[in-house]
Image 1 (cartoon, rainbow, N blue to C red):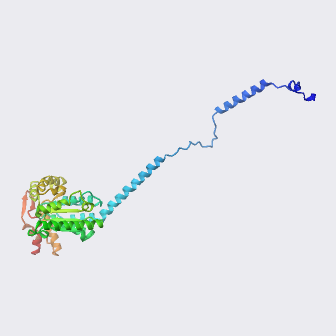
Image 2: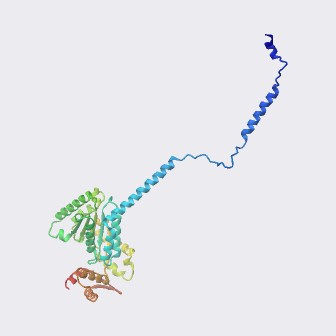
Length: 351
């Protein structure tokens, strides 16, 4: 057992351990490791370097989605506007009016523009009221007839009312009776039109002959604080009110191009509005369209058109002879018919 004596191991003469060398080796190894950590990482030439993937923002996606939704809503609204305008065929109406209404280019353009703006949608905050004013024979009633014919063709006869004061409310009838009758006609039509999503058209001619009671009744239908069906309606008021002022303005400005420009219509409007306001306040709710005097050339056009309707050959020399039989205002080199085309039908019927 002496061979395994513990003291012999501790003081062995065969094995010796140099601890200083081992310590040096460990320190050297640590220095190498520390240097290795600080070295630049080298990539092979054929390897691509990639930046870390960026996290995509969810807010950006939501914003793009919102923009897309708004775009499609706007596109849908534009398509709906086009559908409404196509339903009423206002382009066709404009062509017809330019072809059949003579000497009133500015007035026709103004009427069509108002109708297009109003009929582009079925939702309104007030009815559309258009007042056609001018001297006799200049085409106001003819425009009313063209409008009635057109809207009957694109909608239905049930949604167009032509109201002539002398016929529907003659002088012998009590104003209260006329008031009740007109109110019932309007109420019935707007109710039926609302059910079928149509816009009713009321054409009221000879408005200058309406009694104050009837004007009061009519004005209540023009107010904005009504139920929806009464807001979705078009009223055309036709009268000779302001005709004398328009005649005077035309004669005074005959030598200029003002009459055929929008600026001329605006000046006329500033003259007519006070006149209409003194008759009744309802014209404050109306878009007023002045009709100017017709020149002799326009009267000749009226003769030609009327003769075609009657199946007569429109001989130019014969037409000029008929036109010369009418009375005119003469100013400079211009001649304006004092009665417009009012007497054309009667003259042609005598042929």
